[in-house]
Image (cartoon, rainbow, N blue to C red; front, side):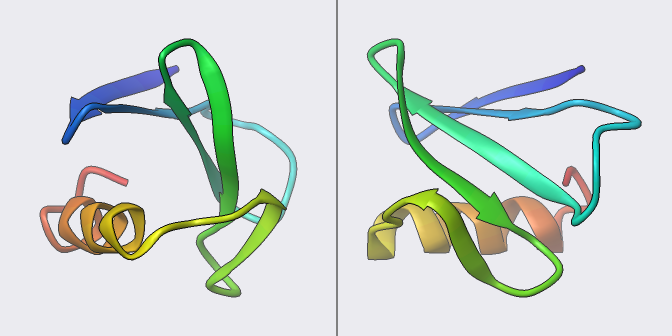
Length: 64
């Protein structure tokens, strides 16, 4: 499991999790969005512009 805190959110990826490749985004202990990294769309919930920016940042840094 990879857990990253950034911008008031917690981004979690489980290594070996089911396809498509995705990240779970939490705030205050609640799931905000489960984001499909391969298809760039939400699987559950809604992503704000801030969350999308943070996901793009993490991807560009090679963290997710």
